[in-house]
Length: 353
Image 1 (spheres, rainbow, N blue to C red):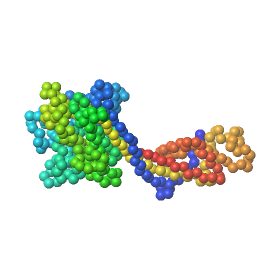
Image 2: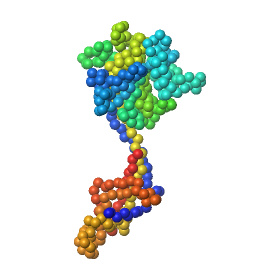
Image 3: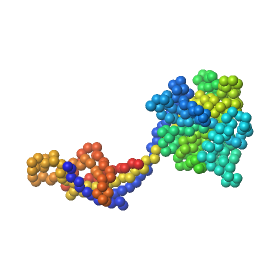
């Protein structure tokens, strides 16, 4: 059995901590969102409150949940009425997202409404919205600021996407153009940091939505599709504007029309890795022998040519022990490291969590 040689670790000089942010590009193509698998990757529920999108037919064990879609409007919206189809559920969906992400006003303790800016001053209100709630599998710890974009089609219901050469209405690209990692262009509320989604890379004009980075939720105003007379197609009433869809169609019917207009979604996720680094030191006068049976042949050390040679060992493993001599962690070096009385080793062991 290999010998166990110990060297104390000085917490003040041999231990340090670091924090690293890792980013991964997440591209979501419209072909998956709009039904590459004949909508078998789209899951609807009997409650009719939202719809789930998967990257593969959802009944498959290989399927990964990508995001959920829903919509709603505030109780104070001009289109809010008890006669609307699923009217109460639509108000409930909007209220739930607003309460979780925005919280309450300080004046009358009412639930805030979504706004197209960072001020939360009850101007630029977005009272009719679509909600895209991304899976934690994709966003990890959060969406990286200044990386989010979603391309939406503004053409007819039958041919929503712009296909070049002047065919079809131009697509719009919403992006968090002003948001920066250092906090510029970003505001914070109970739902975490959020940035405004603009329809141009300069971040000018009115915002058409917001993205909540830690929550992994994009909120897009229905006015992004203003002027489209056939945003949706009702099985009985035919073509519908967004307002008509919000009032006269079910939640599923409205988000079906929205989903088929998603061309691309792209963002970088963020994983925060906290590390503790231990500098394990092997001084010249230690760790030069081994009790491994293969270290000797008879009474001779294999790594010595003559008796006067200095002993040599090869370090392959580092163990971290508690003060009670309990093994807590094991690190393997990539290749054996030669150790003798004329050299010292410092092995850097990093624990990520």
